Image: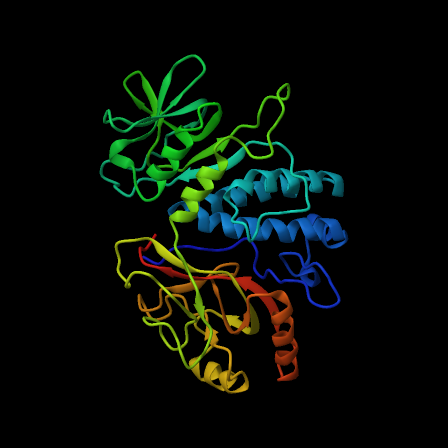
Length: 386
């Protein structure tokens, strides 16, 4: 089954000369009151672009739970952002959401010059169990949340528990439902003995015991430190958690020379060095980040390799590549970060620095691509179908 991956930002463009900020939707087509408010305020347009990047990176960080975050983002748009009456409310809403998604960001997308509020921050999402026999759909489950410490009881055969201040143990995820990267992340979070976490999901019942329903998404937030205590710049052990998350995806160097591609990739794909051969027993591999110039966009699978070959003649020293994710059944398992995965495009590698990328952008516009734009991205190879 092809994974559903629809990004909040349909087109996230990097600034071009002169410096401008482009929001995550086309202001020329703004229709709603909120969209018009955003388009009329440069500060809001900037926050909207940042949130588009945060959301895209967050989906990648939580891997198999991307659909959970997608649903949560849609709910935020509907019940919080779109209910704002004015620009002041919108700014607060955007800052709160950025603060919530901040722990999921790699260094490339993390904000450096904006102070985010101390709000409950999303550190992980437990995806619905893949074993639908052991964890059948429970449409009658009611919303449920609990706050406390995460305790690792895997060695005892139980799994991970959320222990409330009153001492009640609420099963967060049982041993039989530990899948993907969840055990590794929860093990790291359990080491944060001074931290308080909030788990939000749905309640299941086993006699008198309440547990988090394994057939539904469960969101794990780290609660902000008490106001009476000084808040450290980095929460305890946060660096350790980020190192664990980063280690779950290996990053390889891109092979940008069209005449010397890395092994294992199709001619229309941008290749990168992968330490292990392609195989289907791991989630995904990712390249190091780079800049690309999007030459032309269109429907997914609608841009042909003939167009890529023609463009390659105009850029003989830099790889020109297509986005055709799953266009040939399961043959195309290469996609890219910071894009709309339901759109196709032809792009050219533009280097590792923005200065180099701008030179390629100017070359592209001079070569007959007036709508060319910059994008910072990474190549992703998906092995397991989520």
